[in-house]
Length: 112
Length: 115
Image (cartoon, rainbow over the protein chains, first blue to last red):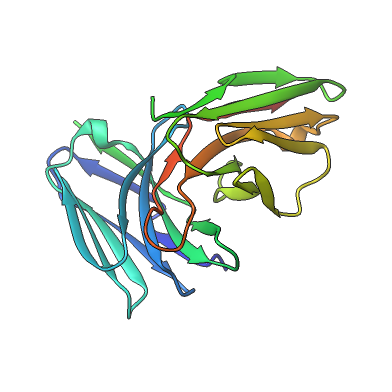
């Protein structure tokens, strides 16, 4: 079982819909990242959060540290939001170097 | 461009070839990473360099050989690869440290095909 689980694995939505992607993790963390990967491979960091909620444009990320759960919401979805969304948790492990553990990603397709 | 540049973007190589992947960042970060992304699998950490010193080698076969000549450049030397090594190889950098500065920046990746 992966230490970081995402759901759903695949999601198809109609343009304008409100979208939620969930991430659960089983380890102690210092921070959690939401990443976006478009076809072609490059990864963009959307959010890094360790508590509460962050908002950027139509994207909202929340985290509940006690429940080891985070959600990424997209309001008024658009076809350009189609991508793989990856949850990654940040562990400190010895020394000064940080380590990310990744979920398998959620493939989102927003249809016009 | 994210600030982390990877070259080449695509590479096809035979199993007897030797090639190198290059990663470059000028963000002032002091840690650099190689990740492997295979189909339907989470990203796997391969190597970590912090302050130009390798701090993790995540049980990667010796046919992959990293090199970090300075804090801005990271290479992955490849030789006698296998078809199952075909994957997307991603470089990332971050500002190391325990207090804040966890932000990662990823490159666009090199799509490697071993034939």
